[in-house]
Length: 273
Image (cartoon, rainbow, N blue to C red; front, side, top):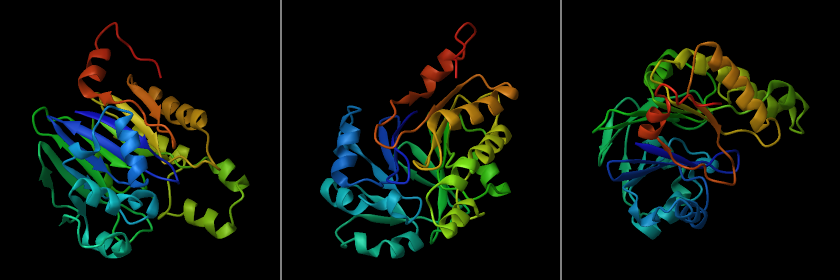
C-alpha cells in the first residue's frame, strides 16, 4: 500500500491510495482539472481510479467530485446524507454507490471501513482502508471535532495515519475570524487543535505505526513547523520511531510506501522526524 496526500487545508482536500493495482481517491475538494494535474504530477493517470470515496458534504472535500466522476467515468462512493446534501454537484450522469458508516465495502483490492465522526456536516465519516493482500491499514480522519471510543477503535493498528491538526489554540484566538467561527472551530463538532491531535496520536501509537501525516492545517491559525513540533514531540515521548509529515495545501506530498517505511524502520535505518 502507498499513500499520497494531493492537498489538504481549508481550500481543498484529497488523498490518493494505491494497493495491488487498485487506486482510490478519498475526497475531491479541488476542481476536476486541479485534481487531474495533482495526480499527473505523481505520474498517476486520472482515468486509472477505481473510485472516489467522499467522507462528508463540505465543499473543501467535494468541490470537484461531480465533474471529475463524469469526465473520467469514476464511481462515486458516498452516504445517502452526503449525496442529498451535494445534489447540486450531481447531474444524474455519475455512477453513484451509497455506503453506510459501520458497514465495510470493497473496491478492487481495498477494503473500505467507514466510521462515524463528530463534525458539523450532514453525515460525516472517517475512513480506514485495508490492503487485502498485505493487511496494511491506513486511517483517514481529517475533520474531527473530538475523538470518541468508536473512532479510536476504527483507527487502531493503522500503519499510516492521516490526522487533522487544524489550529494552534493561541493563533486561533488571534486569527481574524468572527467570534462565532472561532467558537465553531473549537467546538466538539469542529476541528482538532495541535495539542488535541498530539494527544490523540499518542493514544493511537503502537509499535507498527510507521507514518503520521498531519492534515487540514489552517492557513490563518496554524503553522506547519508548529504542528509538526507539537505532535512529533508527543509521539517521541512514547517511543515512536516513524515519520511525521505535514500535508500542504498547494503541493502534493510524495507517496508514502508501507514497504519502504518498514525497511527504514529496520535496525540502523532510524528515521528522523
